[in-house]
Image (spheres, rainbow, N blue to C red):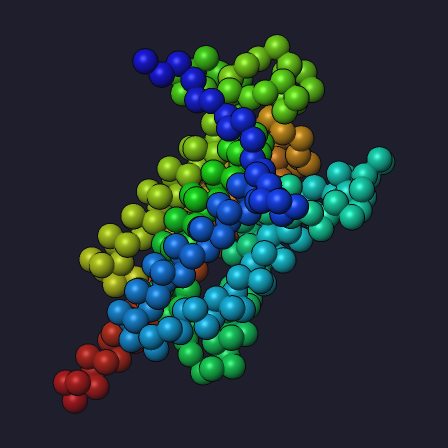
Length: 276
């Protein structure tokens, strides 16, 4: 009978002088899976074969930079506060990649690449949406190896064991915590499945697959964020990422509605032309 989830004994292995970090491996595996999923959906939508890999050459580095920038800007104390280490802002292998910055940065890189090639950015975004959610799920395993971003103490059977050196100040007496990395990973997989199923049934184009992914993700993220106990900047007693979830979620809803209207107008125009 499962009474708790153990944390990995280590998150770094050495091949001679070269450190192999589980966090980085999880990110890389997630990127590969996202590209494979997006490529299949891209070609199905009429995109050029191999186009996603080409666009990923822009989206991935922009996404990584954006993810790190969001983390550093939203949590600057560890790098620029009292006793902070500015050079630590460059050590992404130690964790600290914000999904909001990753999506925004990746979208910017993909938009630039699409503009250069004369391809539809929205078609790429809709193709990539569920793959990005799956990549997030895989990436969250990196937090498990790092023993970070867990939630409040819990005695539930799936409580996550955290080593004493990784427990926050004031929680040293608790051994198991909510595995928010697992909650979010499972939620991301559900979001990916939701996008794929509804896209097949309703053809969610014009940016609607992207908006559905973003909106659905923020619902879960807001809840998981409320469980976390790691230090975070707050506004009106809510963590910054909870506010970001709210704002981004509302933006995604508005984008979905606007895209739906645009799709309806285009469909009506095509019907009018075909019957004239």
